[in-house]
Length: 442
Ligand code: SF4
Ligand code: SF4
Image (cartoon, rainbow, N blue to C red; front, side, top):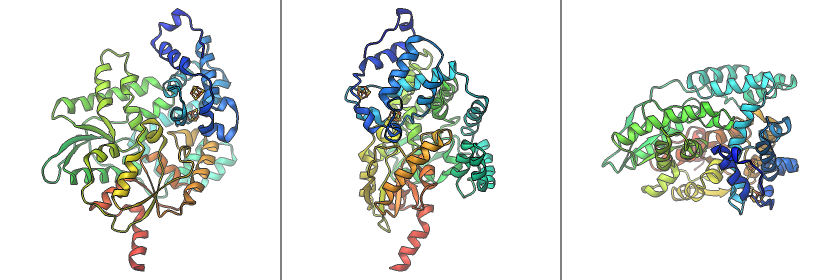
């Protein structure tokens, strides 16, 4: 694709890297076929190629974002299916990330939208505030249809997504070390995250038991907090980078202290962002090297376990599991086989979901800010999963777990919960009833 940036514009490193990406696009349009929003809406401007043109125009003209640009970029899930499909290696992720940053800096959203985004950016990343919000959501859940009728779709979407159970109580885990069973084979840091401790503490508890059982010492680095992913996807770059720097400092202390073999992440959306810290902070002289080191050490938990190898395992009640590949894991990190291979080795019958490349609609805050499209994508995903008649759904991202659980009665669990169970851990909470029923029917 030809571009027409001035020399002065190209002196800005952000414009220079965007220009390289734009020039790689040969506008062949292959990416449109796998773009969820193009599949749903059939509008070229809601396809990767259309968005690339819009971004090119916005950057070349060096003008504030227009309502049209904002509309179509906001509708992008950042699912990155287009990057998997693109034969020319166009790095759409870095392009759209910068477009979102430009939008936040140059476009004034309506007051209600600004307020909602500010609240999400503040509450979701703070487990204490998020816990309070979940309790309020539990109480107000029945009012979801009322908010929808009043046109307050994001509020209605948040209430519908609120799980029916109470949030987990607060627990001080920062700086805690979990010793391995038997001889130590390695030492890793595990990201605690901000959503997991409130909605699904069982995921990291299962990961720790599983790693300890396999001889791995686990540390929750002192001072570590939100990875910055949520703010980053909303274009709030200053907040995102400050959260990234905080975590880089926390993990660097561990790397330079007792040492780490890896930094493990059980939320693939966060993993994709942390693996990109090196790029995000490449122009920060104080952090560029440290950020690159942290990114290079970061692994999805299943990537690490695949190399480590599972000890003798066998699901105590073999189940058929539909494996839902989170976009951030399959497209963002290209971790494809490891979770499925581990589940198969652990004794589960693993089934691929038809149209597995399409997003479930979760995508960070997308299912709140773009609830109509997100609900359509979830309905499509759930229909594809239900065709398989699985006993359970396994996935590697809390966003997908919440999104799918709000649309189906099939239990949804994190992959590590199944692996932990199969190697001697407890039955994952959502499967307890099913396992009891199976046992009494035998
Ligand atoms: S597939 Fe790649 S090169 Fe082709 S239009 Fe899409 S982004 Fe551009
Ligand atoms: S990231 Fe996903 S939604 Fe956005 S353009 Fe690419 S395929 Fe479409």
